[in-house]
Each structure stands twice: as structure tokens, then as C-alpha cells.
Length: 310
Image (cartoon, rainbow, N blue to C red):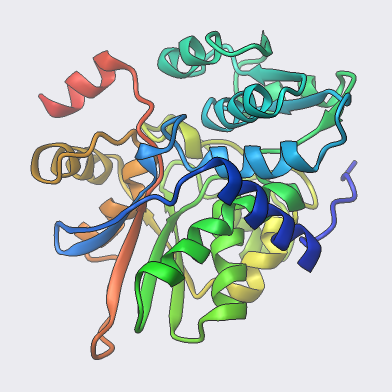
């Protein structure tokens, strides 16, 4: 059964901007690898997900426990926000979650629960716990928080832009797309999935959430299905210009290029947008246009990083 989740309202967007600006510094945009990179890896939790965590936690009344499910980075965002705002939170992660992310979660004052063999199972477990559930993507407050990536881009870069956005559940994509649709008619938004997990584009094509083929991927933060009725699908259908998908070898090549040529450590999901540009899947031929790839996260286990770099 689908949960009834509202689209972000104007007051959600305004509240999220205030909350994020109060807690988080803007992240830089740098020119490298023949594109512009929006570097979310410098966030205090190592991922853009902290934006949605701060926005959602700030909107929840004090004294009410927040419950969430996460492959890792959203959980870190909620945990960081809980510590900053002194709120109670329970974070459920799959038993197969990245060890790097799990160890970082243990450093925060939250109740950490490992449950299920994947994100879908962890989410099902979290939905049965007591507290206010905050989805990593299907939540208006979270989407409003992720929209601040676009708000900052609008302040940092003028002129025509094509923004490559990594897509798992679609929270970041929905946020950036809402910003572009309302603020910049010269901005194109391209959703970047991995071939191993294309849940959002499949749902957009079908007009509803459908079961999509899921395979193991280096981009663990982008893997998994969608909650039935997710509002991210409707937003993507109306405001996203195109979807592309990258292969595992392209993810590895992008991670190496980011580390060795741009000095940026990125996890698989964090390198997906860069991979799409480097592979030629995302471009912009408009005069004076710039292509921006969102480098969305850095939280990768050391042994995985060493394997990729070798």
C-alpha cells in the first residue's frame, strides 16, 4: 500500500533553504575533467544527503523521534542533523551496507538497526517502527533540502547549464529539477542512473512505480527499488529533460579520474554523473553552455577504493 506523500509546497522550500543555510556552508563548484563539478563530498557527512536530513529534521517537532531507512548516506545526514538539532532518531540500514558508512553511523548518537538483505527490506522494517518516518527520497522536506544544491548552483554559475544528477530514489533529481523549472529556463536536467538499477526511469516510462531489474553495482547508494507512489516519479516526469545510464567500467574510470586528475575521492554513486559526462552520454552544444556534474558523495570503504584505483 502506498503512503500518501505530498509534493513540496512553497513553505517547505523556503523552510529548507533557511535550515540548510543555518547549518551547512555552500559547497564549491570547480572546473575539472572538461566539465564543472559541484563538490558535495566536502559536506560534513561526505554526501549531499545531509541537506535533506537537516531540512527534514528541522521540520519535525522537538520531542518526536524520526525513523529512517538508508543505504548509508541518508542515515548519516539524519544522524548529523539529529546531533546538531538535538533530536532523537533511529536509522535502519541493510545488513549489506557499506562498512565505511556503518562505522561512521556508529559515531553519532542515534539508534542504529541493521535489518534486511537490501534497501527495500530495510525500508520495510523501518516503516514498522515507532516514530515519524523520513524517506531518503519520498519526502517533501527531504526533496526541498536537496533542492538547495540547485539554489547554490544558480548563485555560482550563470548562463546555460546542463546538470547531470545521480539518481537512486530520485530525491536529489527531484529537488534540482524543481529548482530549474522555477528559477532557470536555461537549465537542462539529466538524470544519471547505473545500468544495474534503473527504477526511476522505468517508473517515468510506465507512468507508475514498476518492478525494475536490480543487479549488484559499485554505486550501492543508487541501488534499489522505489516506494510505491513515490512523488519523485511525478516530478521527474514533468521536469527532467532526459535519463541516461552508465556502466560499471565507466563508474570505475570516473572514480579514477576524479581521484588522480581532480584530487577528489568519490564513491561509486558519487562518480556516476561524472562518468556520464566523460563517456559522452551528457553534453550541451548550446553556445556558452556549461555542463555540471554533481559529485554527490565520498563514503567508500578503503579496500574498495584501493581496488578501483589499482
